[in-house]
Length: 106
Image (cartoon, rainbow, N blue to C red; front, side, top):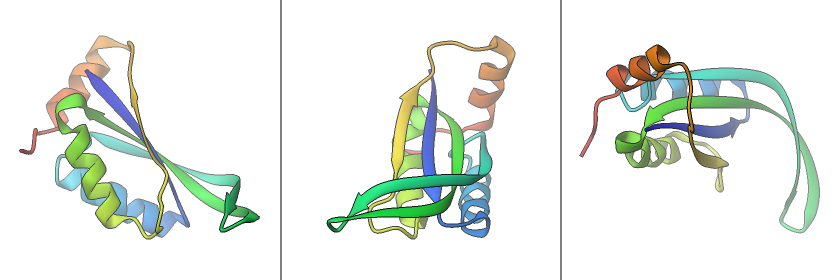
């Protein structure tokens, strides 16, 4: 099964470093960096607005936990957004490619 991890970052440089590390370590097949995300959220009893960068990571169910843990280590936020979503379907050759790129880490 393929898993999508979503996470926001403060800027492109930090996002790019996280993506590159996770790809190099074969914890994810790829990460799409989406700039220009405006986030509105409550933090420490105040409503905040921030420009962020969203990253969409693709991995496997077997590697999702390790990828999530490593992402947490790399992330600069105290409480980062890290969401794990199962992929219900997709183009089989692409799903196979994701699986081939990710090595299970125990």
